[in-house]
Length: 571
Image 1 (tube, rainbow, N blue to C red):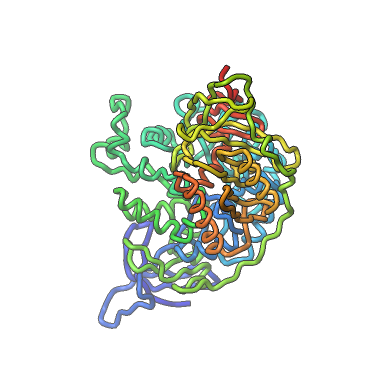
Image 2: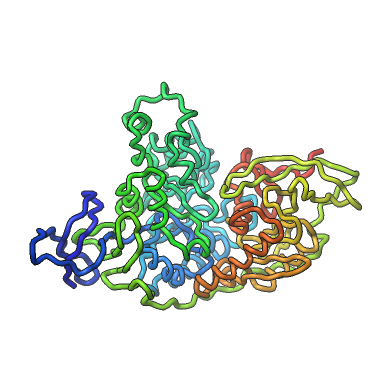
């Protein structure tokens, strides 16, 4: 394959015409040429490296890897570094290998990380456990390019032997270690970084990112469906108001705050979790444009999704240079980034209208083994007329929660939710056969009636349900059990569900069909009064115990600051 095109050189950060030769899916020759009277190009737009999402959980797209690839190439993404810890928590190594197998069937670059925290904590019930022996097995695989995000930061900081064994294995195999350290700072952060952990995607403010960057971490800016951290991190002027500049004597800091050159503070733009209804609209192409609109240098933003992740994870892509895999896109302009064509390994996989490959099905065993529930299963009892309770307070677009309290009335010995205070019931139902249930209260969702439920509940993926009425909560959970996993919305007037039979997390259906059904469920939740833009994704993170400050597992209400269980009722 021989052609001429204007190319974006992400190493020199410049654009020039070049003659390009591709052989066996590899760039063999990339030669700058001079424009003269006979000059012409073979592509109508600008040729750029294909985009790389350096931290994403494919399972959050609710479709198989093959179906994910079919929509991603439409938006110029040709590679992802994905952490399959969602399915690993359900099916263990079997689930990881099923992901790798399905991913290998399509022309798209799926790089995987070995899930480091399965389960994320010992305070929940998961479907599998990946110990250090399992991690060693996975790290030997060519498809595994790193150790996945180390969410158990207390284990790292406090010297947990099994945690440190996994870190030692990653270092021994020469593979990067991804981090997950929300609000970890000072001496604790120093201990965390001393183990070789090199990235973090949990920064929620500029000061947090600044400390981690100065101490050597590579900062991932998350632009997902539920966690939208880009605005908070790129708003340097607002974020710098709380910084005592006298503590710092660093050239990077002077560039950031005196000259407004703050692109060097950040290394990657990532999705982490992307719901199907957002994925059909765009992927990294939209994130790069958004970064530019927020003040990031456009070429630096493009580097964050091309050459930067390529260097860090040692991938043979991310740049148009001899010897690299010929993954590239044709865009209408560097500013608009509308995708005209996408190529993987020198072959066109998206021609501007159609995706040129099919998606084979992915099959896994049923993992939803819970028994049917009754309304009484979701009642919290108290002897008295009124009581004070601990409440999870959640916020739209945020994974962090706050501890709150509320005074609730008691009727017939059962504590009642209060829609006037926006205090609803929340429960997690163990789905792997143990049938344990934990009940608590939550505010921030705004439901006035009915219930919503899902078998997506990070990271152990038990069934999570939020509602005002115990009967509706039981009906929603039972629908999930009937569907063998999925999402459900129920009320006195209507009900509907989205089955997700692949480990209760994904479907083999086309992403546009899944997005359409999810959109219907979003509208149904909104009609019940829900005020959260991505209610099911936000609800799923209410079970992620490693994100402060208060969450819930199938074993109880959890204090994420002190890493221990807490009582629902305040005596």
